[in-house]
Every structure is written in C-alpha cells, then in structure tokens.
Image (cartoon, rainbow, N blue to C red; front, side):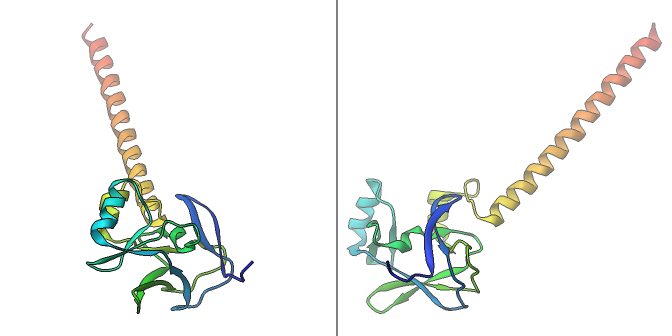
Length: 166
C-alpha cells in the first residue's frame, strides 16, 4: 500500500478525503486524474448523470469518475482548506491553503456555478453553512415562542375581560 498522508473515510456528505498526517500551507495533497474530454462531450455525460467532472478551461474537462482518482473524494466547503491549481498538461492538483491537521477533512470550494446548480445554500454541509442554518433556526424558534406567549397573553386578557362583563 502506498504511503499516503490521507485516507478515504465517511464524511457528512458521503465519502471524503481526510488527512492522516499534517499538511503545511501550500503543500501538494493529491492530483485530480482522469481522461480528458472536450466540453461538449463532458456536458452530454453530465446530462446522463455522470459525476466527478472537473472543467479545466473553456475547451477541456477531466472525467475523474474512475475510483483510482482519489481526488474525487475531496468535498465542497465554503471555507476550504485546499485549492485546485492548474499545472502544465492541463493537470489539476490540490494544494493546502492553510495548515491541515490530522483527521481534518480536505475540502475545496467547487465554485459558484456548481454550488448554485447542485448544492444550494440549504443543502451545503460545510461547518460555516450548518452554523448559519442553526443560528437562523434558533431565531425562528425564539420568534415562534414569543408569538405563542403573546397569543396566550391575549387569550388570558380576553377571558378576564369576558368574566368581568358578566
């Protein structure tokens, strides 16, 4: 088995890539591998349900659907710890944006287009978005609780007013 600084494991969104050893800032993590396709062909495959397509530029896309491409397990985050860098070839490599600790999931920002098309704010599972949704839900609960107390108070006042009229 190759000596890797990462492992594939269960993540919040399915399978993910996790660091087993620390990564320094700007350190190489993994290469996104696959066959090169012209964009029209890649779009046809995506329309049929293919996943793991990485658009390199306006002409080329990498089809990373083979399981030997471990970079396909890098998940999305709005606050990523890795970034995709285009090298000669065209080749895509993931490098650390900041120091990555062991057992931390390796994540990258998939970009606005992918996010809008496939993930959306309501389904993003990165810590930033989960925290934002939890805050919003707490605000909604507090608002509902205040409204319920107000309704209860009004009912009591109406009951008291009705008793006093008798």
